[in-house]
Image 1 (cartoon, rainbow, N blue to C red):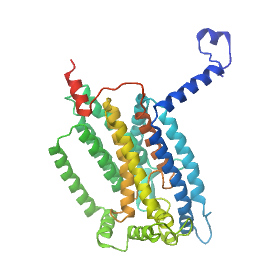
Image 2: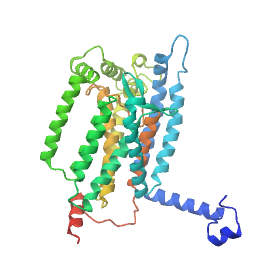
Image 3: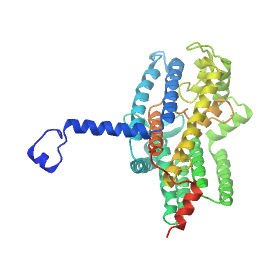
Image 4: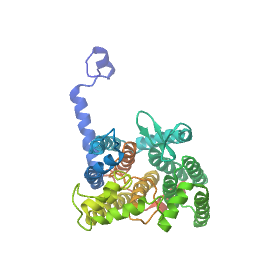
Length: 408
């Protein structure tokens, strides 16, 4: 409607001819392509392509386990759905990456605030699965904690960046209080795995912001005490830790995942030729890395680990010399979330960490989890956008803070 010419619109300047609209859109795309980190974007798309192949391999096993005598699921049901979610996730990621840093910050804060509010009601109205209430039915299952992760990183970066305005503001105390609130709400679900991941994001960001090591040691001791209490009073955590340490049989998914991972040797048994995956629970989500090991081999698993490492290193390299404190903290927080989740999932499949119920980002099947990961990476791509012709001030975080403190 805005492209229809009228004398009033022409006089007010609100009329834009279609050619002008098209030219402005082309200019936006050119600017985006010039500023976006193409290497980081390429690595992300490559992991998504591997994820499509991995879900295709795992889909028959999960469909067979969920089928009943009355209802037989299509063996490629999860693969077909995964393609839809991957396309949606890619659109979300690219769309968000067009935002400016300020717009990405506002979006992250808004989403984080909404998801934090939803965490209060999850234990009350949430759907229960396997003894935990982590999902809200909004036409599809939505897990607020998944979208809170990037929002949490953005909010913490925003609050910590206030330090440049007034060094006396208790910014670290504020984000520590937020961390305690989120951890408490997650344990009501209960969701110990995500609470640990949020703790890792918080720890990296407060270290970058200059938190004293003495306080870090004290909070680490408090975290250890909280983990001990979880072991004593949280049955699921106790059973999983006992199984991890003693090889129990009640919660032996990790042991089964390791055997599946090693069954294919270095080169794998071949696509759809795996046998052990047929008895592996959550083959298309939590333990998809083991399915990859059986059907494609340990060499492909090693390649995936290298790709995740490359994504993390590339994002951190993009932050080197960054002269915007918020961008530095937000970028590091977001990549810590992404890399930490992948690291934990892979360790679980290798039987080096107790089961945590975390998906492998960009590779595991998922609805809201896939969209949440793409939302995270969209924010990361937006924050790491950089004009290659714009000179930056030299120095790192400490130099940035010192320069600000020296200014009148």
